[in-house]
Length: 170
Ligand code: ZN
Image (cartoon, rainbow, N blue to C red; front, side, top):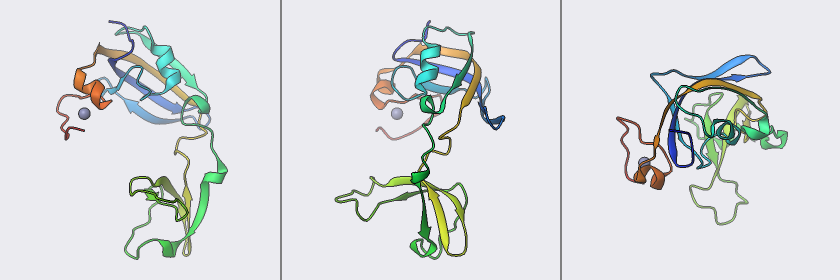
């Protein structure tokens, strides 16, 4: 079966940061990464390369930042006072936090902006609204291990249901 829209694809691959020559992610054949093709839930540049591939095909794709997690925007980095955090909040580099800007009129609780903590000192905390992989050129090398038709509830939920996965109907 070829990779095409609305098919579930299981891949084994490594994802490397080209400039740092560092492995960022690895999915082995007994721990595949799954996505639904054509649902904009995966890297567009990688989906284009995989279109029409079948089980056993290998791929070797380099994505520029704009085809991966976007360019790095220095304006997304800001400094906030440590007083803004609750006293018992344990700051940790790399931790994700969600902030709702005070000038964000009518914001609902789930409409905050996600930042991650870049660094922190005694008084200031530097938070970054860029995706942690923004600005990175990524190299994917791997193999197509599984291709099947997506189930109706997978299409309705917009994600893959793997064996042993439990969640509330959403
Ligand atoms: Zn689901």
